Length: 229
Image 1 (cartoon, rainbow, N blue to C red):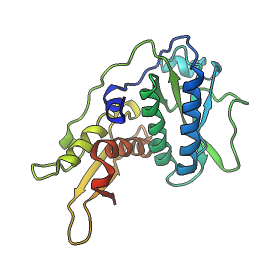
Image 2: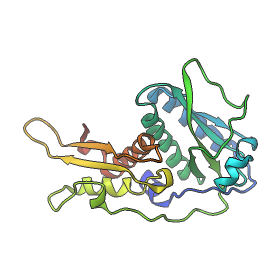
Image 3: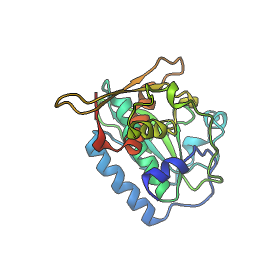
Image 4: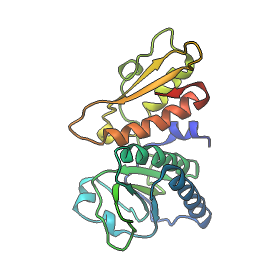
């Protein structure tokens, strides 16, 4: 499965089978996380066979069941931390989908279990990602239109439209999709650019959502076609 195919196939899953991750899958995930932690200056940690984080009242409210594996999304406090958590975390999410796994971004419906993770000085946890073999493959959620979240028009290049379409398949908090992509044509020696912006939301998590959506946009559009503003 390619990342493009993973974007189309992946849906949030909250209920998981009692089935441990295979050694090969664990090794692949840990190697991916190790590399992305370096690139993204993060401290993502894969936690295995630990059910307590998703057994409390918060998990029940979020309708989670059978979660024993998850990724702690952490990093040092910084203005762009949430966006980096979203961007590099979604890389792991889509990679997991290519391995036959299911996932769900979790902002509040979990309990921090002491001793299951390590935080260095100045580090904070931004979210968890549940991961495992889902009881189902999830369901398709209602989505906004391309023109609702971008300045796409008849003159827009195909790659821009494909990028926005991929971004609309990105998971966001309560499916709010509070992001906007602006296409800025090339001129002179300046290449085509894209300005990704987040909109206001009472729910929050818009910066993390933007990072997730930007990763999807890059996969759909192809990074060779543009530069970020």
